[in-house]
Image (cartoon, rainbow, N blue to C red):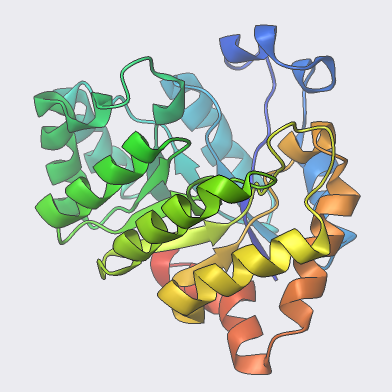
Length: 279
């Protein structure tokens, strides 16, 4: 089973300045061996590393880790989308690296929710589209989801991977309909894929319950189908949302309850196809 959303960080390799204001359990180093052990306890035997800092130093770090450990099958890395000339130059180098499988920015941390629609960012996305490199995209607000749909329409050849199912409003039933409608709109665009990962209650003090998760999974399966969904742990972020074990117990149990074809698509087939991983 492939964990498509594993974070690691070593603060000697990149600043990770956002950690200065993060909950205390996240502020120290979270290294590869720790992460792989945490998710292996729930059946994940391979992982895709996903960027957590906006530096090329971290890009180098993740690719080094991937090259050194056979359990890592790829890395979704940072490139500065606001600098299309750099993106074009770096892509020439990175697309020759077998562990480079995608690009992500911390879009959700930017004060302008429309940042991704900027002219330079769009030029960078055109470079990704031409190179066949997927974009992982974080959406934590209705504006982010609206912009995802706009990007998917403007760049039909770009595969966009929606992280964390666009942040479903766990524990806020009044917002569920809006999120479900926007998720359905995103799923209507064939170049959008989604990760079932990082599903947390709004207060982040507890893990999602099985009942809450089943509602979210049913909604996602109805609009995307299993062949456009993949699983991710979001380790170590869940350590401050009720604990990694509780969150992954709910996720894996729900997937185990599906039919074998659906479950296999979520466990590995979608990720293998979308990220071009070695089976």
